[in-house]
Image (cartoon, rainbow, N blue to C red; front, side):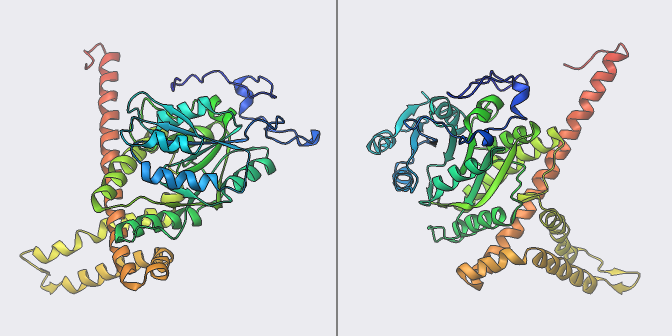
Length: 397
């Protein structure tokens, strides 16, 4: 499957007609006037294909599959794509009657999901991470949403507000994710595969996940969401759709994921596409908070200055007042999430969560600033080389 500018051929689902690629962005996925459901009329076929990429997550996978198997919705199949596991992943998947596929190596979740989508029989692909336990009504919510809205191309949900791992980092990370998704605009501008669904015809026509660019867990879902919206497709953030995240976070995994797997690649994607979202992690209050934290951090270093007066007047009191003012503004802008922390785990946890959240704003903002510098320096070098070539100079290598 290619992921260049040229789209792959549209692969029709039985019961549909082959349409030119240009028509896909404008098509209605069903014909309500004909009284037909947007899902297949062949009752023997599954409507929803649950695609679960997995690598060495046997314990989580069992709970994930148990939850899917207990669904209140019956017309589904489970496809588990093993991306080079060395544990009992395959045998667990087989016990639940899942279709078991193997990538033949360690190709990453983007490639694993693509293989699952190629094998899927359902008209709706529901991507679920192996460490997510869906609610019993999850598949029913997905099928109902697509059935009611013939123009809906994709949807996703969120983690719930009761993460099972009790350490501070896990509680903070999962509650923050839950909060951000629950307050965001239902008319989404991106996509998420922790618990997200898409029509198979749209997925195949759009080119699937960019497995060449994203060989490790990263923002392959976000990048697909960008392409979906660019093609004019509708994406819904359905706040009823929730799953419990089993992952246990520590500070190292938090920083590695937030910076290397999310902040840096997402920053470059924003700069390349010139498309800065205004929702999810990029709401105005979040961007302003990151800026204020950037001003807040260097202020204590004023105490190290040898001269602490300005024209004979002490300026440390003013610096302290300014520091507390900035901190108060940040707390005010984020008061709702801190209330959630306090409501779920108490005031001590809320204080710890606030410190982690301020740290998050700092390293996320710093990562974006550094990526901007790298991106603009590349653009300048490219401009110099182009200019040298146009004027008969020797272009750079």
